[in-house]
Length: 119
Image (tube, rainbow, N blue to C red; front, side, top):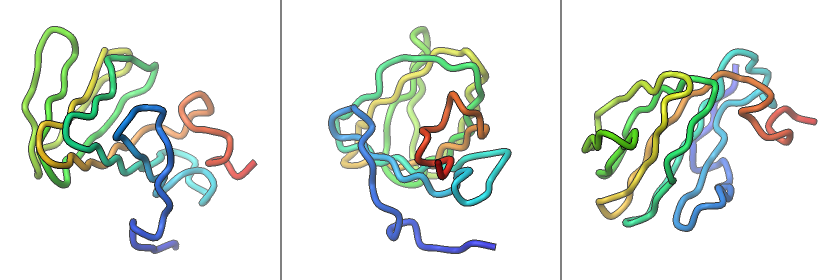
C-alpha cells in the first residue's frame, strides 16, 4: 500500500502555459494497469484539442471549465465526471479561477513519461 497527500507530489510541467500535472499513481509506484494524474489549470489556461489511443476517466475536483471534442462544448464544474473514449478529440479550458481535476489513464508506455516508469 502507498498513501500520500497530493500536495506532497511535485507539480510537473505540461508544456501548456498555466497547466501543471502531478503524477499521483504511476508504474513508478508499481501500478501496472492505470495511472492517476492531478491537473491544475489557471483561469484562461488551455490544453488544445488532441487525441490518444487510450481512454480517459476524469473527475472535476475544483473550479469550472469547458471540455470540447471540437463539435460540442461541455461546461464542467466541481463534482462532474467525464469519460473520453479512445481516439476521441478532446481539449480543456479553465473558465473559473482554477480548474483542478483527476485524470485516470491506462498504464501504457506511449501514455506515460519514462520517469514515471521508474527507469
